[in-house]
Image 1 (tube, one colour):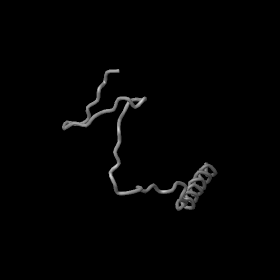
Image 2 (cartoon, helix red, strand yellow):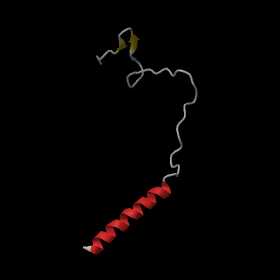
Image 3 (cartoon, helix red, strand yellow):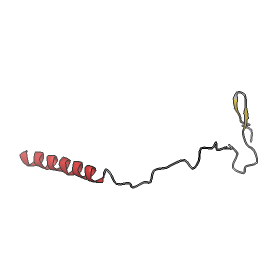
Image 4 (spheres, one colour):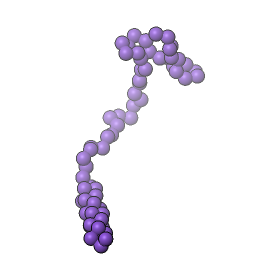
Length: 65
């Protein structure tokens, strides 16, 4: 029982050291906005032939195929 406890504690310590060592690595570059302008988005069908409109109450979406 003492051997199992020691192995578990050493594993936890090793994992904590690995997390601490790799914590400051920048694997993924931070994302930044390209500008401070508004980007317009169109919600359309697959072919792009029919798009949703914007009305006073929100999006106008034609659900008929």
